Length: 143
Image (cartoon, rainbow, N blue to C red):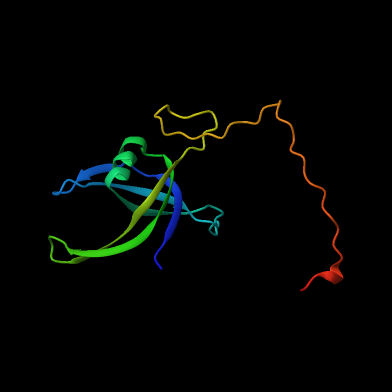
């Protein structure tokens, strides 16, 4: 199985290109912060190349920019090519199947139409009633 789930921030504006057959492809780099701090107490990040195809590529180019936060679900793809100096170069990309635009700014965003905010609860909302739980004897449990 080859599946990757990432959340991070774009390190540069997305670049949109079109193949010879007219298919859109968008490329950008995503900085994903590591889970644990290093010996100095700082958190390092990995910088991953993302490739998005077709309509989703056009949406990424339109709505994402450097610094935008997004979630990517996709797969790892490796390839190689011969450099002009004759050496062999290897690349590793994440080919995105899904890209979700995330905005952690609670007050809206930059107005580009791709912001998602969680509304604050209003004072008029009533707490939900919970059902009373029935006590169970531990001896009657099958495990």
